[in-house]
Length: 536
Image (cartoon, rainbow, N blue to C red; front, side):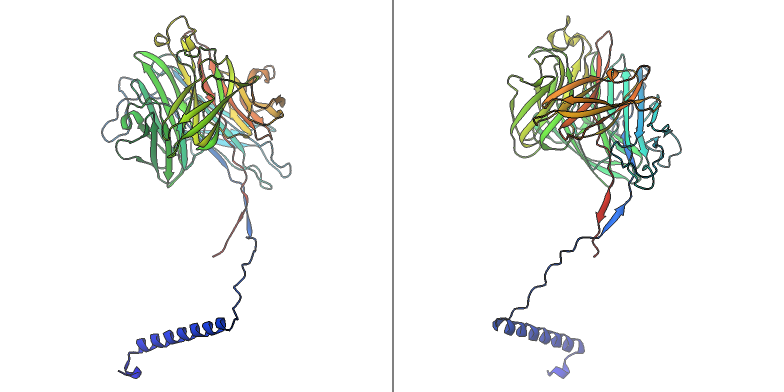
């Protein structure tokens, strides 16, 4: 067959192939002659930038405590019909505040900070509580009734040089009697794609009620990973849970991972950002042994810092002493060094300075034998770890009580690990006695910290400055910085020193034993500023 007899499409392809071969041959001749075409030099041109306006700020607040029973078919959780899901003797309160950041530029017209506190499912903002600040103050609000999770939002401050406002919310639930006796306290949290909850358990008498909250307008799928005292735990059933928009999904972990004395939970969401917390409660027969919310701590890192560890005096082998919970979630373990920073510097805890961590195994390190006081725990590890702490109160705690703790109520609180160097606000409930614990981790010189109280009327008090020595913890009662006749609805803690960590410890006195809660701050949102744009 001649070329003329070939189909037209075939002839065209043949011509293109011959042309390409010719070009390759010519290139080979040029190279053989020692002449090489220079490569195209990369152009190091900076990306064009676009100004991104400041966005609003939002945090998600936990709902009330619940008495839960075994799950029913088709549901994750159900409630005993003989009990009100939110017991009448429980008093829930949400305190919220919106304030201008302390480092905001002074140029431009700001206006007054304002925000809104809405039910999680109120995506259109038709109900709830509007917050508006007085001139020169903060927007403060309080809801005495709590039926579900809430969303606290605030718009950017000003138009020119707009900045995201500081927002803070706190949920507290005081229950003086019954199975859920205790002071539950938790700061409202930002939603995220990943959350680590270090605390709780699912062994006999203990309930771990996991609450997933979706404040967005799209469904989110959350994957659950869990570790226990023997390593990674295989969850019964599918480890993924769908959370509808503007809704909560509740999972009883004792129903999917039973008989785990101590646990660590990792949550990963797709499709939307999700907030989460764990309601940890324990009974010893008919005696309540504490209730608290476990909130998000820092993701795995080689250094973890846990503030707010305020303990009474205890014996080294005392009953129900405070503990430090650790987990190396990777495939390799290693040695972790634990330091406890007290009022006068580092305090030695015999036998606990160095701890061997097995990969995937949750470890509780007892803190019995510490002198009474406020401490900051610092964990330095060869491998990335997560950490949290448990502190306790009660007439039988620490081995110094006149009666065994098994016959007396015990109260508990779970301080979470925090990121050092956070300046910002913390909302405080009216009623419980509040004290700040401010630690300085590492370095050689003191750190300078400024504390400013926010009154219930939104007025900002005079700044109070403190100098805190390196590797120590200062306990500062809020009453010491409140002006006469004022009641604190929150505090602003500001420092330019990246070593500073802090928390607020709440206490309620009771004849059956004091009750305790711990609030850790959340890093405020910052302005996005400029972003680079690459066109393709």
